[in-house]
Length: 349
Image 1 (cartoon, one colour):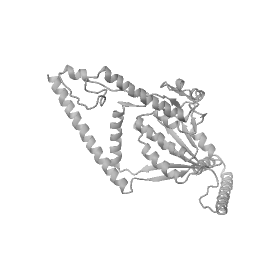
Image 2 (cartoon, helix red, strand yellow):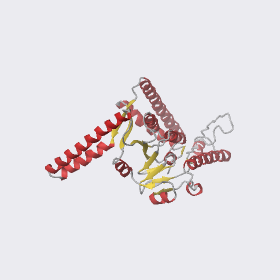
Image 3 (cartoon, one colour):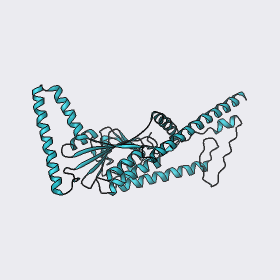
Image 4 (tube, rainbow, N blue to C red):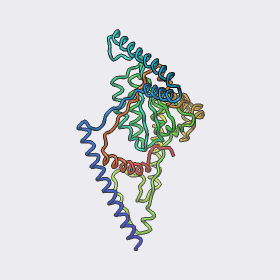
């Protein structure tokens, strides 16, 4: 009986802590919402990668070349750059449109995925900004890294990328490390998928894992009442006794999500053999290329550096304004979300 008392005391303390955390997080969310309504949620950062590449080149030349030779090359490049700018202004005036691009443009977005696909909040703003300016002669490149996660989160992220396609703007996804499960769901939207030679690609599957402590509670004579309205309102539970009927229904739901996953990917990449690739497996580099999961082996650095030769390349990033307390609360919220995400999702394991 003492063990049962200790367990119940521990359970009560845990519930209290979790409730306190949720209250704090709710307050933080309300505060964040007020700031967004006041127009103070963040700002857009735009960086021209051509200039960064030239700066790196200049720094290296200055370190390895004799001073006289470096100055000569630096003056030559500066003169060439100024001439290009003057020519661009001249052509724009002749065209009668000051905003008309002389060289094709690439807008680079970066998506770092977690289990909740929380970066979709930044992605949707970045895409909205890009679509106010980009045309069909431009290109959007998304540097994507994600092992997958919650179905609804990655479904929304994929829908954001679909907005680019709907505007007739070429979309390229580059994967340096991993685009699995929900991450691949996003990548499949692109006109072209590029991947590094050892990037993890695929995992077209769905998983769910739910702990159950019913036998532990039963051992200590603890009853759990679960009341529902609707035959399948709750199929599997953590505390109650799970039934075979509930398990079967849960598996049916997983199979349906898997079918939707395959339909979505298949509609974007009809060249795929879904029977071969929709097994939940992952492949690396050449293996993924052979199965047509990707279109080319190439890192993001290589692709963007090469593009800088004849295109203007801009990295677009939405930066949230967060105070130290908000950043701390965001970390706490992320930890709670990661714990909850282990129940169900599209994540690769």
